[in-house]
Image (cartoon, rainbow, N blue to C red; front, side, top):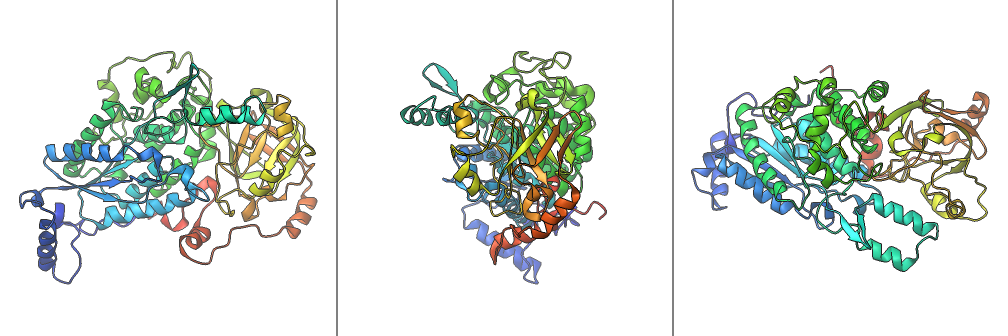
Length: 575
């Protein structure tokens, strides 16, 4: 674990914690209290335990439109429980508003969160976030700071309506964009749809990355039971924020820290839930990074064992017909946990001060079986994600089989290679592109060390001429990521990535690649001597940066199988 707060050895509480070092503690306390009084706080409040509230409102983050209301509710909960709430800002990451991609800045936000939690006087912290990279960044920072912490999420959007059809970002936006590219709908129609996909505050309405990470935060025990799936506009979302403020006071009193909650058993529980909900592939990277902050390794071989044992139970888009608001009405993540109960570690601690087993014992048993299936009658008998290994991905790659076409699971094909995102954009719709539906599309230089910073570009579009001919899916391979709202037979997170010199960089047009989901393998069928020749001629395609965070990221970022965290921020498991 990382450095403990600098007052860990004493019993200081509230504004007496972590005094600024002037070489005179009494003066530091006197100065701090005088400045606190300038904010109009009474002397009695200044003696209370302090609960920090990490607020992430930003006008560049549509997912966080409701954060101010949540912060006010958290403050009510803290005050009612006898504490002093103190809101403070951190970086906010709005997924579609960041260049090159939000993942590059996730670690920066985690550093910001960690240092502000550790550096300011608080007995516990409430983390208020929601958008894809925000929740993992907050959890990473909180685990490293190891101050009592609880997560609050903004909640998913509610669905909209368009011409009698129910819509929700962003699976439906991809579906209609595919229709537009195939010439099935015109520009006026797609413009009309654009205004009906995201109509309320909150995160994407489907089981995308934001909803997946909210679900995993609850599964880890870092969020109040039953709060992951509450819609952003529901009154229960406000009430849950108030309850979280109250719970933060309990955490402060009991000194229950993230290191006591995010354990190896808790991480395995979260992996089980990820597989059962058919969650986002991005969650593997984020959960690996979160666990890494606690010195816990997420082993992709272990993921495969769990995946073979864990059925898919939740029927949400992008793989089913339902949305997050339906999951909430159906019983939420609690219903999933109850179905998985025989497979879970029930002795793990949660932010309620109860074990997971005690939580589940106390919960009502209602569940809507249309949305959350029984373990004996699952949607799919095995988990939604698998890891692949082989000569193309020595350190692993990820396939979301729950969102893929089983007819493509055992297949050999010819590689059609795009060397960068720019090359992909320039040629994917070229009518002269030499490609058939039986080929494998391969994208290089879109991993963590590439100039593009591992964007959600793994959902390579079907080439224009094939899309117009009715092709809906084909094998696609890259070192990029994919939005949790996307679908298709897509191999992602190939590690090592092309920019670091991994085998993916050596693939050429016409090479044969063999995919076997059954064997968990992805093989480049090229002789080693030829690969050695190519390797000797391979140019350096990694990102270059002279200064600032970009340089720090470039020098320290790890590969996908280690969560794309910065190397110096991970905990030493032997420390």
